[in-house]
Image (cartoon, rainbow, N blue to C red):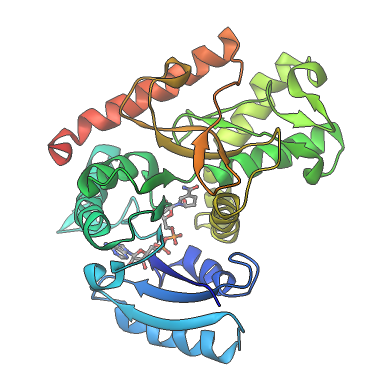
Length: 331
Ligand code: NAX
């Protein structure tokens, strides 16, 4: 029986509570046995004993070995997948200072990703896949990838949740099932500047640019609702999206583990390589596909309108600014 080793950071957090059981339920990794390494900071790592008890009590048939630790290097050894959920949220008091500014958040979380990146580069499998969920996800992934210095590994930042939100809004507008919507590409940053590509989405076999000719709805409803959905959930729930974020992380794993259907693609942010004239050296949301051989690649034949290019530039400019704010972590 095949095995897969998965490392999850932030394992005692909200997203992980929804995510971790579903890694071993026989769906995400099919019939593979899943070995779990659950990682937390030393202050809360002991809480994971309770989570492990719950996992054992759930009798998941595909669960392999489960360890919990605050030693990331130990956890990283020979791992196939890294789901990097752990990060310090905005508003928390860190070293005596309340973290309100995005620049401070970038620095603190970026620091975490230097150490984790180095360990993944040294100890992770050579074809390991890394999905960064912890915010600011794109720039954290850039820092981690740089520190890993291992080009055979695939670093992604999660934009699947944004893509799922965009599909949900579209399905209501067009009165169709979510499963009838494909190719929902999120370009740019996982932030309110992201650009959900309503022109290239395919709904019931037709491209969005043919289905939606209501630019007023696009500008005043679709784009702002998708871009601000995370904040809307926080405002209502008093906590950030958790179960939908967990589902999106699982959907990203499934999209990478299985060949993409012909003509479809999925959303995640990866390192730019000059395609679509995007500035190089940022982690940017793009259309991806998994080949029948299991290689995740950028889909390169999407046609972008001037409207789309202008919107994407706002987001890539933001990513360039974020990169400048963590320049010291990229040396
Ligand atoms: P929680 O605060 O519930 O959990 C985060 C956990 O990470 C905590 O238990 C903390 O102790 C742990 N942690 C912090 N530093 C760590 C480190 N160095 N190593 C291991 N663990 C560490 O947050 P939760 O709601 O689970 O969200 C986690 C992250 O996901 C946040 O940064 C959040 O902003 C981000 N999100 C990203 C989304 C995306 O689409 N990319 C959407 C949902 C979510 O907002």
